Image 1 (cartoon, rainbow, N blue to C red):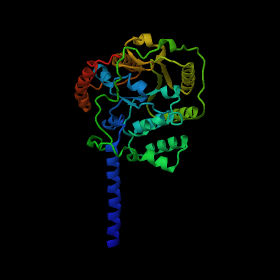
Image 2: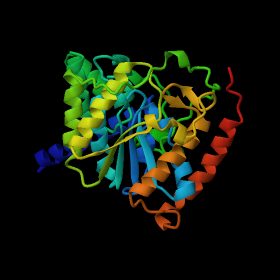
Image 3: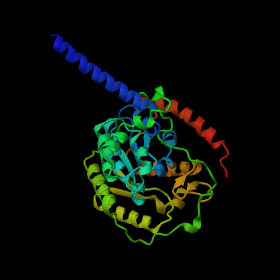
Length: 342
């Protein structure tokens, strides 16, 4: 009997120690962009955008909520890697049953992956909860950068990198309420970052993806084929500075449509969106708040015209969204009132 008691005590001690380790790790994390997603009530996001800062600087979910009752979220990170897209889809589907997934192709246009941009690995893994899905992503990244067992441990158990950060109780469960619903402000600079002389035109040619880029693209297509929801691949209403980006876009568009998916190319619709080249862009492929409001309206109306997305404003499960909107407009007013001119 004593032996059984000791075994039970040991097991409970291990479980409690592991739980405390996980909580402490979450409380010290530095890159927390995706934590707001884990704060959502299960099965309350009808539209989920998955992508990069191109998306989280362009689509304002709370504006779409106020205008159309659309329950949307930007599940996006800075410099999201190509293979992270597939794991992001898995992460979203753990707690949500979206009617529509919007997949940003920007990572493939710019070859975003760990082998090219190891300095951005943290952006792709640090906001995710510990899970087999995160473990698989860390393993893939570690393999691509030719890391060893110790680099793998360093990336997976990020408390090693963040233990000197000040602990935040709000991050106890790697979740917190984000009234922005994933949107991220970028400073308004009056278009000063735009060098119109460096912009290029689409000549209609294709530039195939190769190596890891092609592999990750095909894996994503396969992963999406197993889902029970609508999927749209899209290119944002951005400007291009390299002909190869147009070539990748044209290649991706053809393969996506041949695979039976929808592709929306907003890079050809800047005038329809009503974008002002001097005031609405933060850079050639990012937007300030003025541009984001225009992009949000255009995308939301196109989504509603194409898919049967419900208006949730009178749904009692979404009462918290109304309260968050009040905070959102306050934050928005404070930001827009600042002088960000150069």
